[in-house]
Structure formats: C-alpha cells, structure tokens
Length: 172
Image (cartoon, rainbow, N blue to C red):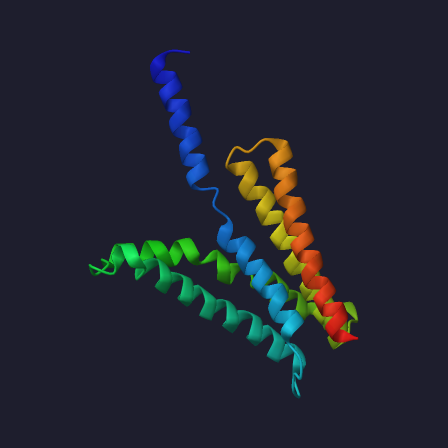
C-alpha cells in the first residue's frame, strides 16, 4: 500500500477509535441499574416515580460529569468557550441516553403484565444488558481484538451481576 494509502487508513482507524468511546453509556447503564436497585419506598405511583428517578438522576450525573470536565484542573485557570461547553455536553450525553431504555421498560411493564417488582427486575435487566452491550460495541469500534471485546463484555456482565445480586439481597 502506498504511503498516502497507509496514512488514510491510519486516519480512518484513529477517527473510528475517537468515536468509539462509550464510557458514558456504560457508566449510565450501571447508574440506571443502581438507581433501580436503590429505589425503595416508592409512593402512590411507583412506576412513574421510578421512571422519573431514573431520568432525573441521569440528568444530575450528566451535569456533574459536564461540570467536572469543564472545570477540572486543566480549565481552572481559564473560562471555557461556548463551543467547548457544547462539545462536553454532547460527549457526556450518553449517560442520560443510557437511562432511557430502563425507564421505557418500567413504563411498558404493565403491558407485559408485570407488577411493580417485575418492572424493577425488567429495568435492571435492561440496564445491565445495555452496560454489557455498550462495552462490547465500544471495544469493537475502537478496533480491539475479539478477546478484548469479550473480556470487556465479561467484566461488565460481572459488574451487572453484582448489581443484580445487591437487588436480590436487599429485596429479600
């Protein structure tokens, strides 16, 4: 392959890796599962409360991540420009997006004939599946070999199982 062809191929790999950061989605999925596990003492409208808790908690964590990135040590000396603020907001948005599937699972759970407890378990399962899936997609898009993709998915599956075991222990 000519030098210019190699350079273009290297540039495409670099660009693909730059767009392969699903850290926020993995983190957001883990957060969503943790919110469901930690949700206890829901009131008169438990499904609505759980959906709101999932979405609002993810928004708070998103704001926290944006703040941390913008006002961390490297920017403490200067004011960020609006384009940097928007870029960081977009980069961290997967934290919020990851809460949507578990929230939708809770919202549609009555259509599946699930009670509130079943809705909670469904939401945890959806969140953990998202966590595992996003970690595998991110590793794959970053160009990781199959064993690293599988390892990333396995680690996230174990973390998800830990969250599920917490729910099982706390629920009983």
